[in-house]
Length: 404
Picture 1 (cartoon, helix red, strand yellow):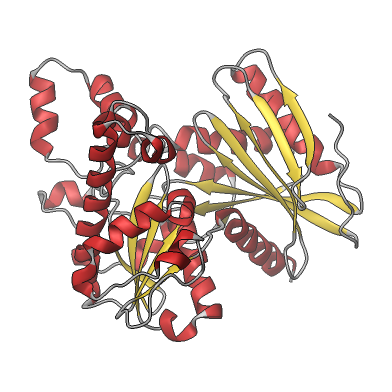
Picture 2 (cartoon, one colour):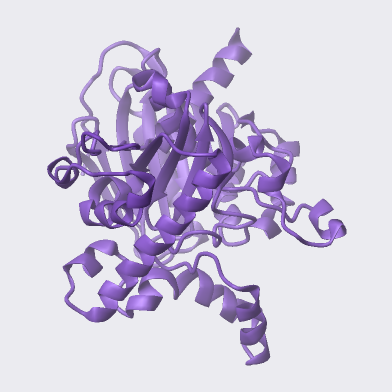
């Protein structure tokens, strides 16, 4: 299908945002202007089998579709070339001027967006042991663009950076100091999402933003963040994206003794990694699916058990975040489940009635912005997150500063 993208007017360079994972490459294209309008968004799914690209314009119309026969290193280069070709040929625009990348882990030193350099790429490669299932995929398009598109400015944005404000007690594990000093600590993730929500609250609900807010980023990956005056002071994920809440296929918080038990039963590190990342969570408990929509539609008692455990774990961790904040003024649900699953929000809030939370059932059912009932002691909101736009903002800021 040939791309036919509606001209949004004006001659502006474009910012391409890439979010590269193990089996997908999500992308979005923004016009480099004051309002950063989105021009195009899309995804390449099934990278490791038969990659398929689909793209939509800002009005939701499909403008491109393509499939490759096999998923390998050669096809990834072809996939990236196809995304670049789309980005280079948008009517009314001057082509690409910069690329922004989501980087899952920045380690202890990378606490702000940065322009990519060979030295930075080498430093990030050294961090792969902290996120071995994610960082190699994040870095792959960066390395390719560094080699083939030297004229493009590349900016990396770290999902861990937003949480660098957490106090020492919130960052630390009770491990021997030599291990902690080697970088084994709580970093937190979903930072780009939390940063977007914090900015949104500051603009739309400034009084609440200055208070104590817990944000629930609930999707296939899930975590909570405690915000005080818009600053992260605690979060549920730790060294890795396995910690904290139960997720689609990840276990969440786990007694370390379980790992030792599995090792003594003869499971290899690779086996255990696969169990914890890909066989656990909603999928593992239900035995049916890691997709909350499938479980909500199922009458299987194991599906109900998985849902109950999911909402229980969220409520327990909201209690912990409330303690970290010294109280709570607002609760925000975001990401795929948080924005689109009224039953999950209702289940979580029912478990939090002790906090004085009361839902407006009708507002909750229609995924309204404000879903707390009159008399609720905690404001409850549903807010769509936008990590890609957050990355585009960082790219715009860094490139403007460099040009200024």
